[in-house]
Image (cartoon, rainbow, N blue to C red):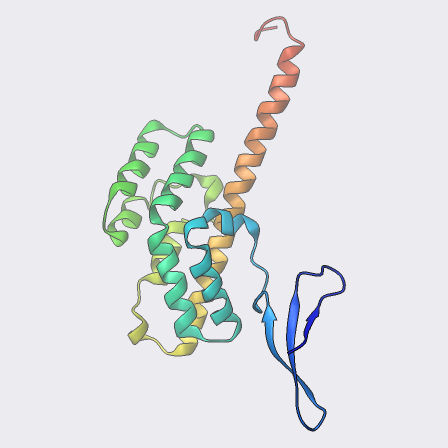
Length: 198
């Protein structure tokens, strides 16, 4: 079977099959079809990136039950990493030590539901999405069992989970970049001063 490569990048390819009547059909594609996923999100969920991308493909094909199952597994598997990243951002923002302690305690919770409940009042404002705690939103989106919903409901919840994960990854990145830029600016400005009080 002939393989046709993208003339622009040379990496993407299609496998074509010729029929007896002269028609040509595409029978495969590499990389597999799927919408673009922000690199920020893939870095956030790096251990479950492949599972997430399976969910993304299922979502793009309107396979709600499949997409929901994959995304739900990602959120549950990545609980500790999500908390770890949120704690790092909280430290960068210099939030109160008791808030960080609350987040650390929630991270150690084995039960997914309890961990998210314990952290509902401990998320830094900079990470909230329109005033909502992203962990509470994710818990709400993943709290229903697949058997309780139609495929359309599962698809909507899957899309909601993805959008919240993307927004959370973007906020974390923005806070980290802003903090790094501020530190660099302070360093440059302070180097011209004889003392911090000058």
